[in-house]
Length: 482
Ligand code: NAD
Image (cartoon, rainbow, N blue to C red):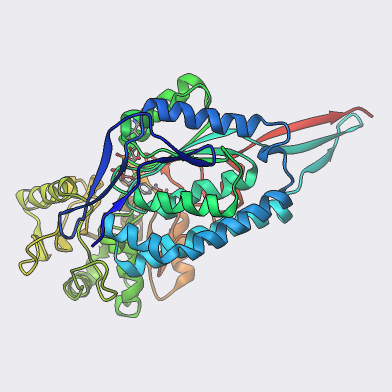
């Protein structure tokens, strides 16, 4: 495979020489070999990127002052350029993080352009300013100003989908952005830069600096930044929230999860096997909202355990570029070590494994871990409480609905969740009682038009839907006397 190589960074609308000499080298999770490199961004590169974004935002005739229609024209062109590069972008994601190609095509190739068009349209049509009558006469006009320069920091697991949860509404609102991709997934970010150049995004509106966490922390605290939008681990989110608290800087945090799939006694999982797989194991178990705690009624325990075990055993593990693959390699050797540590912990705590539990015996290279099912797991166990971020499921029995809801809510996290039932109305009643940001009935998937985000240690704020736009706007009241 030809190596992917970039020598410059996308700053101020053009390819800029990096200020440092270091490179970010990327290894394939499949071959474990070097597959290319890009410049490692430094604090000086962040300074240049923030200055460019600041200038672009503060320009009295610039992006932030344009009408939504004028910005929309450029964003439509941006969406078209992203679509043109969709196949290559998806391939880049797969070769960097092991995401199965069918998943990459949906979330990484197609979804970003959908979001860009959605938010451009929303600004053009649906979020008009409002005029309210004043209590003692006169009126107030409530307007929504773009928040300013946005620091967008994203993880490696769904690099493009997550980038555009931030970029699409921020740019549509009139903000300018400094994007810091994760070190593991950098090549796809250069596809975005190429699309931005081809679409004619004005200089400074978008700047991209791939770098590590220290440089990320520098960006968060940078005096030129007005808003931080972060997706990643809860530990990093806490540290970012502390900085933003000290600076009184608005912040959106999309963090970790450990969501529950409640299987009701009337459910027939065989009717929903594809949806159940997606809700529990999509992207090799490396998605924050995955429903990795499966709660099963004691009355139907053996049958459901058998059905989950059979589903997991039937999955095809292998090359993520092969369209028939369900489970690819994990992103890094470090991530595999971490996941294997949890498998060892689950075994040491005495829980039975009914599927998987090791590395696939027929694959010599690649950071693979078999999809694994632990059964009879007490919800207080480490493997039921901590986010593993790999293809590991726990099955926990419950007595009745109240018990199921109590177990689902017994988590520091609250991001996703699902209810599986032949009676969707009953499922919805239960969904209402789960303390979480999102829940699915007989399926789980993020809808672009619906708010997504977490409660408790899963985060602050919402992305997607009109709510996702609001998080890049300041509300201002303009009073007019009678
Ligand atoms: P991570 O927190 O280590 O890194 C995420 C990004 O933040 C990277 O770009 C990293 O360089 C940067 N970063 C790390 N520490 C930072 C700091 N102190 N200041 C500024 N930037 C910092 O997370 P990860 O291991 O790369 O990603 C996996 C985690 O992300 C999981 O916990 C997962 O649940 C979470 N995640 C959450 C969502 C969501 O929407 N809630 C989506 C995807 C992933």
